[in-house]
Image 1: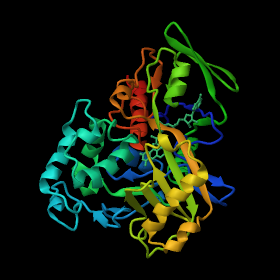
Image 2 (image 1 turned 60 degrees about the vertical axis):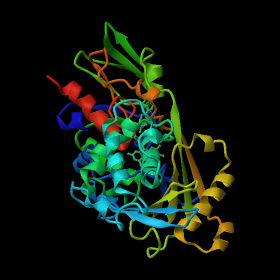
Image 3 (image 1 turned 45 degrees about the vertical axis):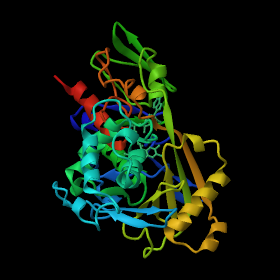
Image 4 (image 1 turned 180 degrees about the horizontal axis):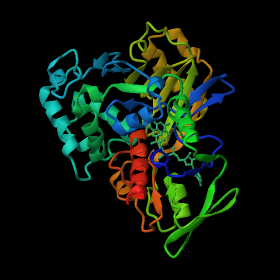
Length: 403
Ligand SMILES: Cc1cc2nc3c(=O)[nH]c(=O)nc-3n(C[C@H](O)[C@H](O)[C@H](O)COP(=O)(O)OP(=O)(O)OC[C@H]3O[C@@H](n4cnc5c(N)ncnc54)[C@H](O)[C@@H]3O)c2cc1C
């Protein structure tokens, strides 16, 4: 986006038949409806993501509650609560029993704020006392943000997210997600904007080889043939890390990944029910972690899900549906009536946010002057998120635009 905005002539080669990568929608023939590959949640403090959304004119494509509110339910105890930070920077919400996490102490919040100062390799589960605030807020947020179990996930990456959202006050943590689908909100308007700016987009064009001569990329090979580069041409390699490592054998990049499981159930949710106010719900003590109300279906996310990848679709649907039934407050007999479902296993959803993988993240700048890297796995200082991916693109563009 940044390069086309600055008037550069841009050509895009995309391996797939459509744009979107790990953040896309498609029509599922069996369910007879459009679904997303997986639920994606943004927070209003994701400033690069919202600058992008403004640039592509898609602010109306996102919905969610008007206020910073995070509803939770514990499946085991049946307890429900909401976390409601106040809008401003001074966190008076932590003094309010109706806004903070139940059964927490003020000292817990002081400890939680310290996570943002962590610079070493300590993991989330060691980052603060494991009391109610940890179990009921920090851990679920960490698993969602890092897509890594807290015993291995880097606290400093969680701290980086907290610094830009929760610790900036409620105004920076209003949950936002697509009203329709990911493609409608985040991808299609971008493609329209790029096309309007004269960007040429080639789908089904997989880059197979990046050829360098005398420390310059001189040609790239796609499934459609060889493309020679002029002296003034540059390449932004914005592919997943395993592809980048194949194309650039000397590159060190993340090589351990975590899966995300999404289960979509055909189910018309009740607007007066538990998902009515916010459109989503966090679940504790279950297999399901986040439940979203979508048009004509309910969509469930389970992060850091490597160990579920070998389970059968029927098993997964059955387990997750029991959690959904409880979360939505459906009658007990609904446990035997699993609606039509679609399981999506994103096996390499993100790199594992561990110290070892963090050390493998390369900078956008390479040793080859006309080659830069982009992607959520480059050294953005953030975990693998939309915010990180967009920031990486901006960094890559800034390098090429620098005089
Ligand atoms: C299920 C799921 C849930 C998620 N939830 C959230 C969330 O709630 N919030 C959040 O912020 N983030 C979330 N993420 C992470 C987010 O989707 C990613 O961080 C982001 O999409 C990464 O964008 P990217 O451009 O770096 O990579 P990608 O989206 O992977 O894009 C890379 C592109 O390169 C293309 N490509 C691959 N090989 C080649 C080749 N050889 N030649 C040409 N093109 C090639 C691919 O087809 C793809 O289009 C989630 C991810 C998943 C999978």
